[in-house]
Image 1 (cartoon, helix red, strand yellow):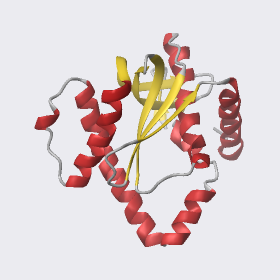
Image 2 (cartoon, helix red, strand yellow):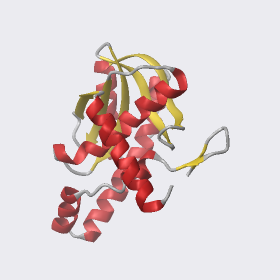
Image 3 (cartoon, helix red, strand yellow):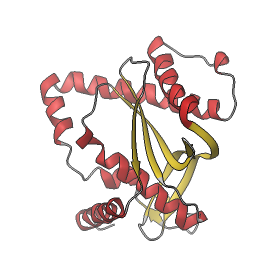
Image 4 (cartoon, one colour):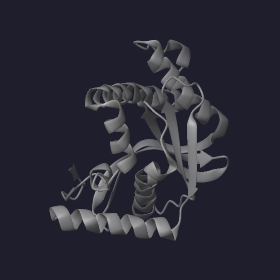
Length: 202
C-alpha cells in the first residue's frame, strides 16, 4: 500500500494488476518446473533491480564506464536497456516519479517520462528470463496507461505513447513494445480496478 500526501492508502498498480490471469506464464512454469521457474524469476528480478538503478544514473548523466556490476549478465542487461534509450529517448521530464490517482485510487512509481522518437511517452524497463508472448503484456500496458492517467491528474501532463523496453536473457538487443494511449486501454484499466475492488474491498 502507498500513502498519499493527504494520508490516503492506495494499492499499487502492480498489486491491482496481479488479479489478472497469466495462463502463458503458468504454462511456462509448468513446462520448466517450479524450481527452475523460481530461480529464473529471482535472477531476473535481481538483475532488473540493479539495471533500473544504473539506468537512472545513466539518464541523469553519470559516466557508464564507472559503473560496477557483479557479473556479466548484469552488464548485458544494462547495456541492452541503454541501447534503447540512446536510440530513441529525448526530452526527459523525470525518472522514478511517485504517482497516485484519487480517481483510480491507485499509486505507483514510473520509471521514465520522456519523448520516444519525438513523441511524449511513458517508458518502463522490464527484464525477463524468457521471451514473452504478445498476449502476456496487456498488464504492462495497463500499468503504463495508469501512470499516464496519474500524470494528467496530478500535473496536467499529456502522454501519447506507452513504451516497454525489455532486456531478455543474455541478449544484447532489447525487446521494445510500443502502444498508443487509447480509450480502449482506459476502459480496460477501469475494469481491472473494479475487479480488484470487488475481490479485496479496496
